[in-house]
Image 1 (tube, rainbow, N blue to C red):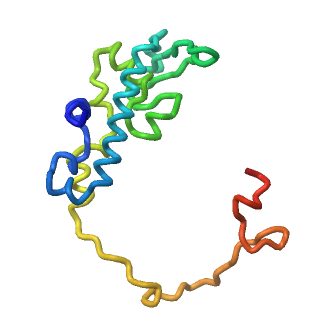
Image 2 (cartoon, rainbow, N blue to C red):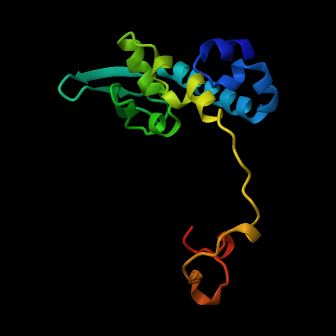
Length: 168
């Protein structure tokens, strides 16, 4: 399974390809495995979608999902050039959703090439190539040049937690 994930998701962060970094970044590997599983899951789900129309003027494609019981038959608009889909998943995760992957397949575009650049190995290496200094304790912080205003809590509460939040 790991080999299959690695092969299908060649866009993974550098920590997966670098054994030394992988040993020190287990959480990164876990995150990447989850993202890769998401990519493959959406790839499999894309088979059930239908590309319904393309608008050259808007450079958008409509994709209809398959009915599954009471769900499905939704239409989503995919804009490949902008790397976005109306479902919001591509925007949120940076990985083409099932609708985008269906459009990629219909127009012979590699869905893996549409993954956001911040998952690229070089971007990862550039991000963590600099030296980070730890933040010192509050004793060393400069005094702020303003008065701290405490939040207002209604009904005499000193904090607002989920247990006493009637608006959840």
